[in-house]
Structure formats: C-alpha cells, structure tokens
Image (cartoon, rainbow, N blue to C red):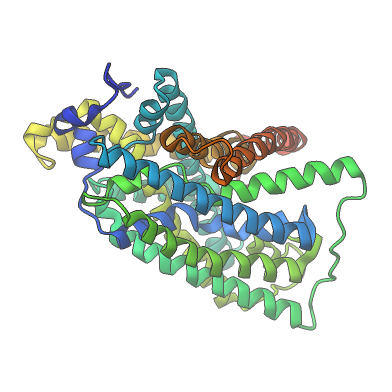
Length: 452
C-alpha cells in the first residue's frame, strides 16, 4: 500500500526520492500527449455498449443522458485540472489523485478512500481489457476454425503474455506513441461498426425494429438506472491527475487542450455508435453491438472483412487501455521497490520491475479467465467507483479550493451535480447489483462463453 502524505501533506520536497513519481510518472509530455492518454482512458470498446444503454432509456432519454454525462464529465475534469493548476501555482504540484484529495480535504482517510476506489477501477479495467481481448481472439479463431479446440482461457493466456511484454515499458510517457495509435484505432473501429450498422439497417435482411421499453414500470426504472451507470462508466476516467502528471512543468493550462482533443473524438465516436446501433437493432441491441451484427442464428449482417477488421482494431486498442490503467499500480509498486538513485534501467530496478509487473499481469489474466462474467461486476464497480470519483469528488475539491460564494451560480451548479449524481450512484449500484444476481445462474468459472 502506498504511503499517505506526511504531517504537512505536501510531498513535493520528497518527490526526488520517490521512484514511482520520478520513473513511472515522469513529467516530460506536451499537451497533445495528454490528449492521447485521455482518449485511450475514455474512448474504448465500451462505446460499443451504447446502443444497449439506449435500449434501457429510449431515444429521448438516451440522447439526454449521453449529452448530460458528456457535459458534466468535461466540466468535472476541467474543474479538477483547475484545482491541480491552483495547487501547482501554490508550490504544491500533485501528481496523484490520492495526494490531491488528501491535501485539499485535509484528511488521511480520504487518501485511503481514493486509492481503494482507484485500485478497484484500474484493476477491474485491466482484467476486463484482457478478457475482451481474449474474446476478440476467440471470435477471429472461431470464424477461421469453427470446430477448433481452443477455449477462451487459452486466448486470455495469449493476451496476458503480450501484456507482460508491453508492461515493461517503464514510464507512462513512454506510452504516448501507443496511445496515439489507440486514438486512431478507436475512430477506425467506430466507423467500421457504424457503417456496418447502417448497411444492416438498409439491407433486405434488416432486423425488425422495436424501440419499446420494458413492460413493467419497475423493470423500466431498473433498466434505466443500469443504462445510466453504463454511460457513466463509459465516460469515467479515474486517473486524470496521473495523466496531468506526465506533462512537463509548468502544466498549467495544458490539460484543457488535451481535454478538448479527447472530447472531440468522444463527440464523433459516441454519438455515431449509439445512434446507428440503436436505430438498427432497437431493443434487441446486444451489450456488444458486434454480436448483434454476428447473430447466433442466420447470416452475418455485415461483410466478414468489415467485422474482422473491426475486431482486430478493438483487440489492438485493448492492449493500450490495459497499459494505461496499469500505471497507477506500477507507480505504487515502484514507490517501494525501486531506488531512484540507481537509474531507471539499472539491474537494481530492472529485475524488481520485471517480476512485479509480470505478477500483476498474471493476476489480471487469471481473474479474466476465471470470471468471464466480469461485465456485470464492472457495472457495479462503475456505479460505486466512477460516479464518486469523476462526478462528485471534483466538485467537492473545487468548492474547497476556490470557495465560491454560496449565492454564486458555480456553487449551486457544483452542489446540484454532487446531489444528483450521489443519488444516481446509489440507484445505479442497486440496479447493477440486481442484474448481477439475476445473471448469477449463468455464471461458470473458467467458462468459454462470456456472459453479457
């Protein structure tokens, strides 16, 4: 476990001795590098679940929630960046979410609360990335060799080996070229899927479109809050301070440009995927729209090469996502295991890095193989983790830092967001846990089929 801040809560003076800060969170990047990291952290294959989220909300509420979540998260990340800038100008540059929260709120327990939530989210995403990448490989394999003997856990093992190799890139900044490629991959598979959905919707084999919601009022309410939790988790990014830490100081103002780059990609990809998928499949949209285009019965609804290329793009981007969300774990490990005086590639630091990062990836790979129903667990983690970390805490930090007058518009906007999303998080947690229990009968450890 990482150390909490010392008595003065400002660890800047000791950062030169902190290998997690000096090595993993090396501060050499430009604003566009932050844009690449942010895009990889937010714009991932989870956007392929947006038609499924619309299925629980309908057209009007779906558009409203997607737009509201996008607006609120951009505003939230902007406020957090302003708080980080304020602290930096005051001589207290924070490079970790947990340190920022502990400093601004003056609380040692907040340090542990944030690191617990961050660890749950980041490890969950690491496991989910390996699981989805394994599923992508299984899809490609099944199309080539329908009677093949390889199972899902074999492909998860292959993905884990690749992740072990890639995880040896020593710093967050060293992922910048991988994350630029990730940005183009996300645009690429989005356009492929959007084109496939439109083509399927206009074809002679177009599925019957039904946009009706659940028949009972209680089921509609639970489905709506589950969908809201899904959208919140898709927009979630629990590592913004760590991403801002990769910027060469002074970092003031640079993060805003990175956010604008990221949200430009979000606007293009999120809306096009949600609209085209829901328009084509309505309330029959699968939790992964690729599966809707490849129904279990009947012919594929898009050319094989289009779907195959889309799956390959998704697979490649999942490696980048797994790497990005592993950085917090790596900086925590190296804070204790590495010696900053001996250089990043010295044998003293290289051997522990290889061992610890290998074991971390094996841990994630093992749980990905054991729990192929991790989507339901991630729904719970999203509601319990992403909403407080991304929709609530930044508003609290801003209000505590800048202390806007209680009669001001900013104060009331921030307070309203805190109240609304706290309630949404509670309801989303209940609905996600309910779905977890409803799906429990389908859960099988080390199964070769992923539960939606």
